Image 1: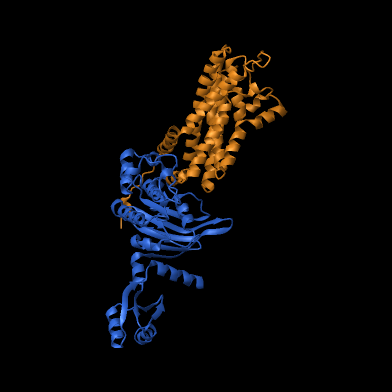
Image 2: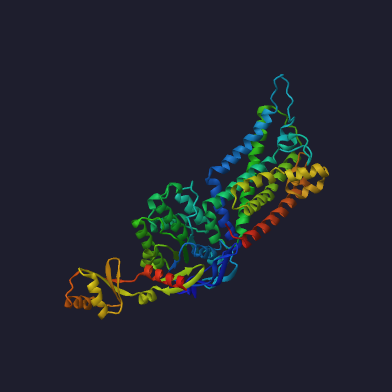
Length: 276
Length: 300
């Protein structure tokens, strides 16, 4: 028999553990087609909306939904109450695509059984929550870039819409939305942890929350109110074409706060409940 | 210090105990055969050790440390229910992901090493979903072997394997305990197979550990018996019963228990005019031992 004292156990640091988990998730992300499919979706859908809604109708006249290319990226002002589909169809759509992607990503962990390998070697459940949040946020940030460059710039050039904009505000808006990716990814990871045994339900719940329907509903009742910026969808709407540096601060605070909240609760659920 | 030490462990599902105040001790370096009928709590216990399930009560220690210790858990390899691989990824990619997960530095070499152990060097580029059941089981073992595990937890790893596959699996398990100093906890229904490799046994029934013993204890407790055939079986039985304590007629054979010297039986029968057409010396194996133990428990 072997003497147990001969076997050495080194306690891995938090960063070493996280590096391992992140490494797996990024490897998977880049080595499976799903990520690239969602990048294409994030590019093609806004491009189609921008070019098709500007086409002339049967009577030959055109009444474009977007008079400016950048409206497909963000609304002119923070509109929590939707009066027009054009107010709604902007870069916030990335958070819906991202929600579905995160659900599929986590769902495959459970469906394949790989989650057993992860939780056998990672005793600390926070590694899982944090890693999925980071990978989800990275994916959504990448989708924001393809959305901006192809769905916005390229489609704008092809459809001939105006490019007039306050560049500083545009940058603040895009950065604000990219920062919001962290909060959204944490929300989706949390939802998928709750519905880990029900793949379909987790996708539907991610889609439901991603549409921001709850905040839109609240805004319809209580009106446009900046208090809504404390929510993920509220801050995402706040990042608009009239944004300033304050927008980035608000988005950062909101995103960090929800990331922390969802990660704490997600870790608690994973620690107190059976993994699958 | 033991590789696994479980004290008073319980886990219930909807009020029903799957593991009921169980104790278990697995010495370091052992191949511990975990035996029990379907639904007896073997897989639940293994999942609890791996941290997949949260126990209701009790404690689990791995190598003297709490089972939630990150340093110990990173040295645990497991194959529970299935290999836990992504079906559309290649065998190599699946192993690479696990190697990254474990934070290994020389990943390529490590993957080659484990593939060699499970004799799958030529199948690395095949998609996991295209592998046969036997291959999948071996990939699961390879995954569990990555990163020099101190403890391997294997749930029914030989199920569904053909004779060759079982032989390979047996050799792999003996090799990793002897050459890599790994402790193995293995559950299986195939007691004959388990008997060939296990150094210790734990028998579980209705979530309770009813007996733990070493292979040596098992050997000492195992009963010797001689089975034979004669022309006049009933006459031979009557004659043998006069001389030997326990003689039974089972499966068209006369069985004489606890007599180590077969020559005595042969001599005695010939002296009494019986011609032996077939004779064999046997030992009660794990399977019979287990069945006997279970029927005793049933009777209680």
